[in-house]
Amino acid sequence: MTTDKRVVVVGGGVLGVSTAAHLRRDGADVVLVTEGELADGASGRSLAWLNSAGSRSAAYHALRVAGIDRYRTLFAADPGRDWLRFDGGLHWATGSTVAERHRAEIAHGYESHLLTPAEAADREPGITAEAVAGPAVHNPGEGWVSLPHLIEHLAAELTGRIVTGAGRAHVVVEGGRATGVVTDGGRRFDADVVVLACGAATSAVVAELGVHIPDASPPAMLVLTEPAGQRVKSVLNTPRVALRPHPGGALALDHSWYEDRISETADGEFAIDESVVKELVAEAAALLAGDVELTAASWKLGRKPVPGDGEPVFGELAEVPGCFVGFTHSGATLGLIAGELLSHEIRTGARHPMLEPFRPDRFRP
View 1 (cartoon, one colour):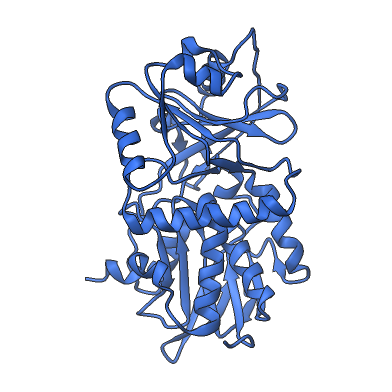
View 2 (cartoon, one colour):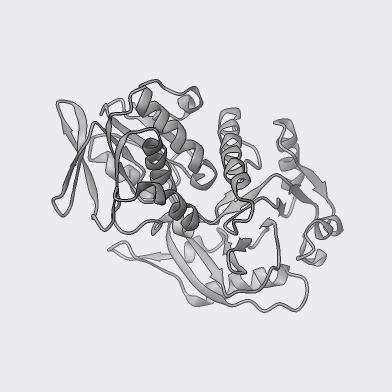
């Protein structure tokens, strides 16, 4: 293994910070450069549900399960952390999709239980059975993480190696290889390897290199409520709101039904009418047992990173040797394992088999 490589990681979200931390642990000379502050992009507005629920390819399922395993290792080191929990997940929806989801999960060995509304309320006493529309799936092995807290935890390993407020970075290519990055402000960071973990901006950044990675990143919103006490432990995915606990007794909320009500300005800023925020909060309150009033404390808007085919994109660009990419919708679940495996590839020069189905090469004409 080579540990003397100079690496520049671009992106202050969970994929970038995790990759930089894993590289640093193994002795690489690494610097992390981010446009703004740490966790100010998608990682700062992610529900961060740790799961491999539903139906997906065997390779993607295996990678997500490995991702959950790494979080369990972190959890075991300090079970008292209030920003990483494993208290299960509950899902319900209308129609036959719940039973189909349950069958798909059983088929690939994922622990899954089909419950009646009353049984769901027994498993999660914080909700009311009347709110559960039909059968529910319970996945006891699932959890959640607050990514800003995780990023702060990992960043402690990178003291003196993080450059925030750098502006947008562009890959420098010399002699057919990536040799560093230069920022809009003119700062240059030379390196043997560049890692791009730019979230929804990834497609635009690699397009400057003549590389096509399709993007399907939708607008999204995460709402944090005012502290409401310990109302629920599970992650809930329901027809009108998804929610999880948040450190300090708050709840984190999101969903997709309001995507078309998020507007984007010409300069890339996002906005939504506050009435939509209140409607989402009301949907959450309606799930909870007892007479509960919830109030939004804050909400964040932006694009949710999703590659064009929905599958993760990990690995070195064939067109630009020395430039690696990490781009995925499941950044929370894959955050630790993706950083570990990308670091492995960079240090050893060997392609890891678990990343083989997710290479950026698949988009080449």
